[in-house]
Image (cartoon, rainbow, N blue to C red):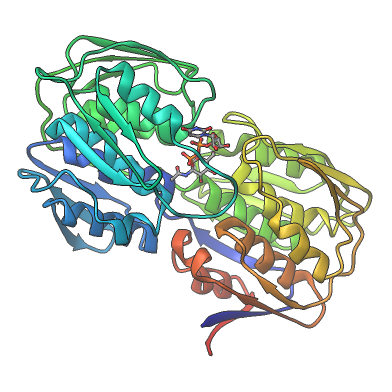
Amino acid sequence: MAKFLVQKSDPLCGTVDISGAKNAVLPLMAAAMLADGECIINDVPALRDVDVMKGILESLGVKTEEMGPSVLKIQAEEISTNEADYNLVKRMRASFLVMGPLLARTGRAKVHMPGGCSIGSRPIDLHLKGFRALGAEVISADTYAEAIAPEGGLVGAEIYLDFPSVGATENIITAAVLAKGSTVLENAAQEPEIVDLANFLNKMGARVRGAGTDTIKIEGVERLHGCEHTVIPDRIEAGTFMLAAAITRGNILIRNVLPDHIKPITAKLRECGVVIQMEDEGMRVIGDQKELVSTDIKTMPYPGFPTDIQSPFMAFLTTVQGPSTVIETVFENRFMHVAELNRMGANITTDGNKAMIPGGSTLEGAQVIATDLRAGAAMVLAGLYAEGTTEISEIYHIERGYERFVEKFRALGANIMKVNN
Ligand code: UD1
């Protein structure tokens, strides 16, 4: 199994270009199934999750073609089956995002229960609640979910989400765009990836209003056509490199980042004493201040502090002066990295969804596991700071969601290499 070997590194310096967002491109690819013409998507990152989504689309009879680096053509003139391939679906939770478009386009969708990172039970009840509200008959079994539209198709409805789930918001929007009449989705997720999806759908001829707020209105249309769209930059990748500058006390210029999307990360890093400034070319993050200090973090749905940056931020907090607390409110089981950071000497304690980080730790390299995608990034960051060598296993998690990870880190001076053994 491949591993990363990470060694204490000098302050990271240089320029990094952020790729298209994983969490935006996956719903866009699924939504391309709604068009009867060609969709061209630009800035598609080369990621395992993207390959899995391509495979799922192809297994449904949709044609995908790489038109060049980062450019993907999706042609869904014909859809040959209503059932997504189990072997692919089990590899990634976002596979479930094909359910809304498949139901809208063909009137029937069957998807096996998805896999992905094990950061909590991650139910799909809110997705199914939305499909039911739109008139679908929904069968929810242990291993799969199936939705069948009524004769005459889905019908717009008023839907309230008990929690602003990102995936449920996306699945309900993509199911509702071809429904008869209007849908109002309340307590919707407000993440930038939802706005990107709405923009993409509107280019295809959909009528989606209010994305980016908690109330989204969708007027159903009869058909959608192809379009061309460029994926937004990955705010979580940007946050990871901001933390790389902070933890190594380095100085990194981050290009292709939208500052509005990363406000909570910027604000919290500034509280710790990290200098962040906008330049013509991008955002400069300077962590080489004399003493960086602690802060407290509470994850929330957007525009709150992103749960996906919780573990990388925690790795950084182990290195600053003074104690910090981290409260995780989005996922129930997202502290698996705590045990790994403790192997390196972080001395973090937890009480339910609250972690207490004493700070000021001199981390020591150790053998650790990338317990999920973002926890894997956190271990790399900790490894750059720690004395000696950190050996990180199960790195396939990291490769699911970061494009050219090792290459980008090495270009900034990081001591990281991938070994196969
Ligand atoms: C998406 C992101 C993921 C991010 C998460 C939260 C993608 C591909 N993934 O995941 O990186 O960490 O948003 O920002 O975009 N829930 C329910 N019932 C449901 C659906 C969700 O109870 O039907 C709960 C989940 O268990 C979790 C919370 O809602 O506790 C948030 O999940 P959700 O926003 O749906 O996350 P994902 O869309 O899976």
